[in-house]
Structure formats: structure tokens, C-alpha cells
Image 1 (cartoon, rainbow, N blue to C red):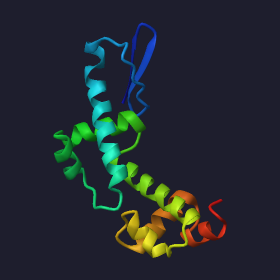
Image 2 (image 1 turned 135 degrees about the vertical axis):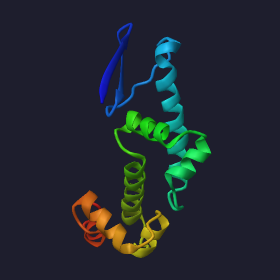
Image 3 (image 1 turned 90 degrees about the horizontal axis):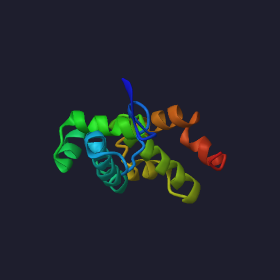
Length: 142
């Protein structure tokens, strides 16, 4: 699902590729993608400040007053990722940063970034970073 809109030499990709926003596009071309950008901006900032909480598509949709389809499409347009993958990546990124900067036990880090079990954190971290969290910490985050 890729299509390309061009207006006055400005590129705008919608679908699974990143969305570049500019205010110089006319309103008729920009109305739907601009709404997607607003939804993404608001939802992503909420996600980043509430990573330690249980986040669901339904709760984000209620907060944004949008359908699950529109929320997913806005994330796909802005990042190329689904909402769930975005949340997982942000949690893992925060966990990696905490491992480099704090001496907290790995189980505490996993809970603080929103994983509800250490085994799911361990599995997700190994899949994303290529090693288990303890090895990552021992190597100093390299």
C-alpha cells in the first residue's frame, strides 16, 4: 500500500513509508494526512510518558477519540510501524538506556519500562538487540 502525492514539487508518502508534513500543501491534499500526523503526535507523546503503564489500542483510541483503524494508519504513515511494535521498541530503548545509566536490577528495569514479566522482556530484548539484557549490560551497552 504505497501511493505518492506531489503538489508543487513537495513529496508526501502515505502508507508504509514515512510521512513528511509541510504546511505549504493545499488543504484538500493535506487534510487526511495532517489529521494522521496530529493523531500520531498526540498518541506517541502519551505513550512515551506512560511506558510503564499497560497501554492498549482501545485506551489510546478512547483518548484520541478515533477508531483503531485510524490510529494504526497514522502510526504506519508516520513510522512504518504498528502501534504495538512502536510501544515495544520505545520500551526496549528506554530499558537499554537505563541499563547503561543505572545499577538497577534487570527485573526492576523490566517492570519500570512496562514489561509484566521478566521472561517476556528477556525474549523481546534478545530479539531486538541480539543478546540477553545481562550480556548487554556487561558489555556496557555495545
